[in-house]
Length: 347
Figure 1 (cartoon, rainbow, N blue to C red):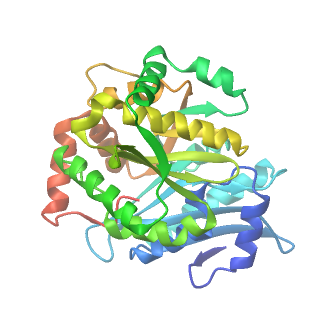
Figure 2: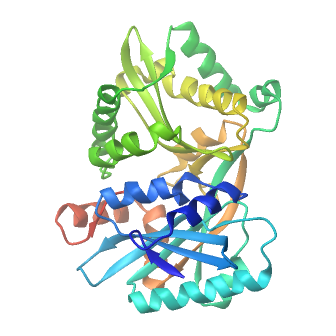
């Protein structure tokens, strides 16, 4: 069944969250509240058998050209309980396709959960593949081995930051979050990238922080905030959502000490793995995001290659191009600023 935010049986969804073997914050009811606060329309798909929820998917409206022509996206879904069989997956994907057709979705994009393999079912229903990748750190390993698995320059950066007196702490009050967002927005504008809004950060602060499902760690030098990282967390995973730094202090290696702090923090709390977010499927030194890829690689994670999925060939081609070509990225950014293409936020 497909439910709007208002129609959803919240108790059933929370049961599914609690029993899921692969829960991501980006598939929680709390995250749906964040999306709704931004004007995006979260929609839940849930498979229930004899009153028991077995599988669920949270999707949301994203970019749109008009009120009618809009796209839907999914991050880290679906969430499932143990023992779900192939016939249920086939039923779920078939139902998803039907719902999208009824919604007249301009496009659909789905970034799948790390440990749920739906590729064959999606392809059978005509979904297109987009090669994707991320680095995943296995936090089951002893802390000493996690440190040893870091690349040499990562360990060097952590040691230098400590030597220079850089400290890491959690930002727990809104004033510190505002200060971080100002730095984050400035950095993104310098890179000609539309930053996530202050409203989104405020919604995450209000809805996820009380549930311990988000952490903002900031690096300080002599009391001044010089870098920060925003993370989303459940008992299963830690996600690197975004980060920012003051370019004047990069030589102090604040981003390095934040990353190691997060690995230590997540390990101590029994979190299973740390997902560093987007990486390059086939690393190329000429790629505009190669530097980001190299930074994420040095934290000892495995390069996890997987396929994301889309409906609408033009969207699939455009997304692939935008990931590879800086000029295409800037053209898209300009079209957003001119209002030709709109989106609720960069969630």
